[in-house]
Image 1 (cartoon, one colour):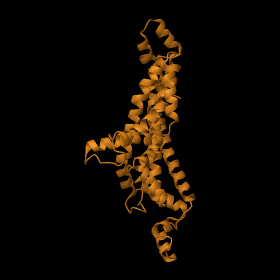
Image 2 (tube, rainbow, N blue to C red):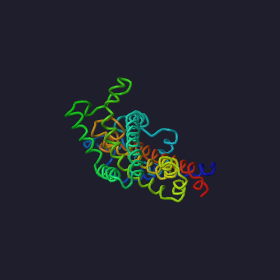
Image 3 (cartoon, one colour):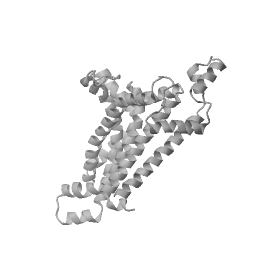
Length: 314
């Protein structure tokens, strides 16, 4: 098991390094000059030269990458050109909004999807199965931002129960903080719940079609025991993959939801960085997103090895 963990950890580190290389190269290819964006279009050549020298833009790309990635390894992502603040500090502040939103959205998705998927698999052939499947297909087809607008129209405009946007920090008012995140959480979670529902049903039906399940039924075990103890346990490998991918999609989907509900999270910060050509901030944010996704993949791999010993010896 230790060798399995070490191999996966080394692969994760390599993935993060390759992601850093791709991010740096991709931003080099983006048209636009950070010095011009910072100094202004009417800046004199002398001012532009001074700004480029201050930002080390005259250095070769390889030298700039080594300096930037070396700083990342020390926890220094550089300084934002627009905010004149360390990138790490900005990302940490915005994570306090984006991370709870993504986690809450994933919790909502699991609470809705897992029971519905299990129920649809258990009631296969009854009227409940096509009802759940059809609802899941419709839910998967609805964009999260459009669902967010519908939630605002119903719960904010028509009923007036919840705020339509904005964010109240937890330290100022815990109740208002929760109220400001309810609608964004539902918009994120319900859309992803549709995908998880369909995958849960499919994975459980595949597990229930195996010979060991038929043997358990032949021994006279109750149907609920067969489904939950034997079928669901063997469907967990597939479900963990789905949940890992879903959390990545929720985290990325929060970028759009933050715009819809005017939340000061990483998504709005990234769009601001794109508009102002704030390359150090944009590099740091993309690398953080890539690191989180790689970390999720690493955790999923470890869960594979724990649930199925055959995987760790491959």
